[in-house]
Length: 485
Image (cartoon, rainbow, N blue to C red; front, side, top):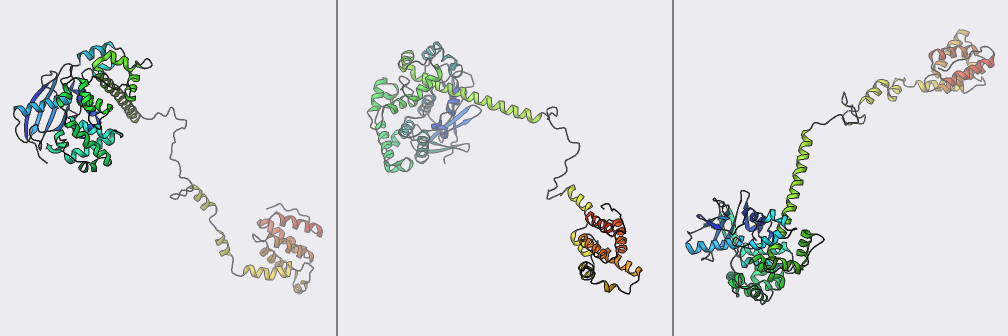
């Protein structure tokens, strides 16, 4: 990469009215050349051109505002060697043609001011001169690749060809590549071009068009009668009406004619005039040989209006978000009163089971395992083996003989002990049947004593007490009604 260290400064004049800021804005929207230029927000633009007298070298130009404020631009040229007079003049002419500085738009502006729907657009684009492709070679490559294709593909193909076959240069660490002029590009073959375009047919078409245009007189195309220039382009195999009009307007800056019947121009006319859109012939009659500038100016101004509106809306949304973030939240609109204390975690929270677990731990500290462990081993089996078969399983008194020889006090103590073992929690049914067994054996006094103690300790449920009450009533010895414990 060649670093260009020689700096040459000069000025360029422009036909008034001219506004460099409008040209820079148009360049920012000019997609086919966005990767070939370097725009500076401070108000300048750089791009590379082939050296006027050395096809193997390049120069980089920087265009900025003039210091004296006159219509035109300040030009800085970076080169590897000092530029002499003819070379510098050639660079100045190329930059002037690129930015359309010499375009005389006075008659066009007069007719546009008289066109009421167009007049508001001039508030944005009055000083806009038509920005073009940097050279005829660049325009031919782009519009040939655009045939039966899309803008992004044509831009990509042109960029690839520029990087591979172009002339590299560097200024202040920025890399640029100048696309070669027509004589150099016309020597390429389809085999060399094919890797950068879409297929063999596209490569052959591009090589054919480049060679055909290179054989024409470029001065005739730029300044000769419009009809002759158009016919000369149409004589090249691979160039049709659309490509010829595009090269004359967007590359050579000839505004004499525009295919207004195309949809893109119909859309522009509808956006400007609304329902009362004039016909293409009426527009041509009004603007005459400046119809191309009507199309270019209206499309640029409409694009800028949309961009400005979008930017204002974006700025308003940003302002509202910033104001909302700064303003403290008002509690007057809230439907929920502010909490005086933080909410307790949910009882199912893995980190904190909450107050429910605390309540359960306080209310039921013992578990089933604790109750089973508190029972002495073998006591349940002993009670069932002794009390149930003897006292409960034989209500007919077949085991009464086992009580012979006991005094009344011993019988009372024995029956009370048996009843205590049967009225433990969970065994009330057994206790009820034990009372019936005692009653059947005539030991009503013992049964009554046991019932009194069971009622006092509330160790028997309502069913047991009710059964005991019925039992005692039947025996006639006691008529006590026990309340449910």
